[in-house]
Image (spheres, rainbow, N blue to C red):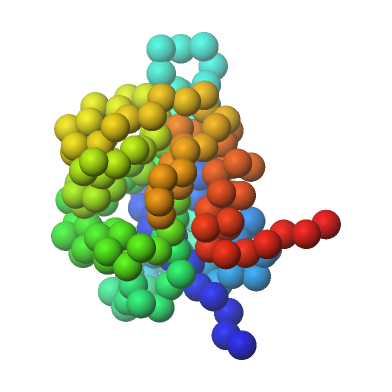
Length: 193
């Protein structure tokens, strides 16, 4: 039996936890996680940013880690994957300018494959045009993006998750336990203790 593959669409200044934690958790569960970035190949790195909530009007941002990519963006074929992870941070802001990145998101959605997006990841979903008539959570500052894309923004606490159909969305990294559990459930996996 071959290992099931998940695509993680990253970019420079993706949020550190929202990139590292899903990559590590899904790998631990036995999935092959292909982390890719436009114009980069396996072995290249992206810089991450750490977003924290310290009482300011918005999150603070600090340098994160170098995150090693595990696959080539140029060779991505949606049919090879069972699900898609879209981390937040600043990367979705410019990844949505890449036509191939939009096609990848559209391909996962058209196939009904699970898509897990967190925080600013909703910007990529909105730009791909897959939110029309659908519900989506995100970092609150992305609520207007969801609404302008024809979706309904779901305002929930930062540690919660929203699932509608194949979309698993959440406001920020404090949601990881629920967000990843909901994504894995949509993938059809069962975790038993």
